[in-house]
Length: 218
Image (cartoon, rainbow, N blue to C red; front, side):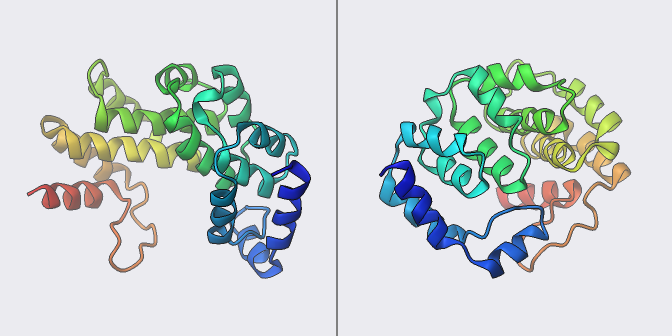
């Protein structure tokens, strides 16, 4: 599919009602995401097209780019530059989860981004840290991470706060010897304690999240 053909398909998916709802959440697009995913499935992986779509700077095109790209084909510098352009929440979320998490450069980028002054960038580093806590914790100083979370999470920006909270929860879930400390930090800070949670879903409030996941582990 050419760039012009892809943009025409995206234009046909635009729904003013969806856009109005999305704009309330800070997202500047009117895409039904199920239909967008169906379009991506038809295109399949196309790195050249993904680069062209991203270069438009338009949110619908960038969302499609993130679905059809090949994460391993981006360099660390390319991923760094792209992340700094992901201001719309959905673009940031998909970029981190669909591209950065799948990149073989994830650990290099995690370390590169951890102390970045841009909270969206630092938030991505904390998301990668949460993944590593859960899957490959060897070499991480978990006590130091808890120290930093305790000190900074309460006043962090929403994206960074969410990712730090996820790291806190993963430490409590996956590392029993630190569970009580993680629970104490979550209880003290009360971050996301009032987050609206749909029936049947687990609250992101760390003490509840940790407790529920430990219960499921039996």
